[in-house]
Image 1: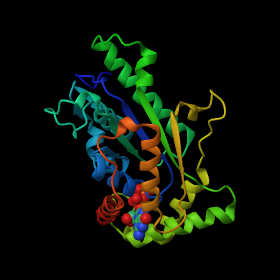
Image 2: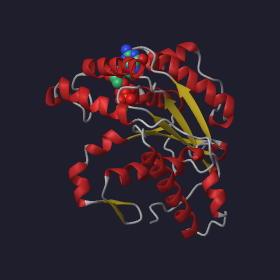
Image 3: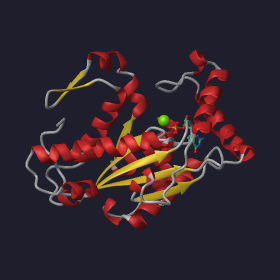
Length: 270
Ligand code: GDP
Ligand code: MG
């Protein structure tokens, strides 16, 4: 299905893929990165709001109907890769600027990661073929770089309990300020159960063999949810790591310590 009329594969394309559970700081970090660099933030949780409309199906440019949350999520990611709204049309260097999207959902299981890789690649390939772009299929897929952001979950149950405590506290103190997980409606016990379930199903990325699903990742960033305020430190680590490995993701100077403080402050207020 060709959702997109104008493929744009002149620049580098990056998909940031958190591998995490609820409360690890995905949305906080995504908002801060958007604030600092204009990278597109696509939130799976936002898709829920449109649930009723989903049932009817959504018409997008190209006349295609999207019916599921996942289709919307992937559509929004590809749209961000092809037509990033932060690009200034008058900017002479826009061709060189990287297109970066943050795939904000847990992606905590192999099948979620596999689905993300497949759906994005298949859509871009089809779109390219239909518009007569003669870049070979394998090249097209390599033009999109997938970067994992692995929020590590210790296998040891007592160690894992620490992460569960930190994230549970964060979510409970957030109260009702979330699209889908509302304290008032779910109650603390239910929230704890949901969160714990995600942690127990967590499948850490495995990239030891080329046949592993996670071998599709071009790069993996490893971070810890070590304390309540880990997002500031994790944001800085992610920026430094990305800059070292993919400098073309950035234009101009890297943000200062103060810029990073402000971006996290902004994200925590949002
Ligand atoms: P997600 O479920 O992975 O998207 O987690 P969020 O980024 O939404 O974080 C969950 C809650 O914890 C939100 O209310 C955040 O504001 C809060 N939070 C996340 N990181 C930090 C942090 O480093 N410090 C503090 N004080 N709160 C944080
Ligand atoms: Mg979130």
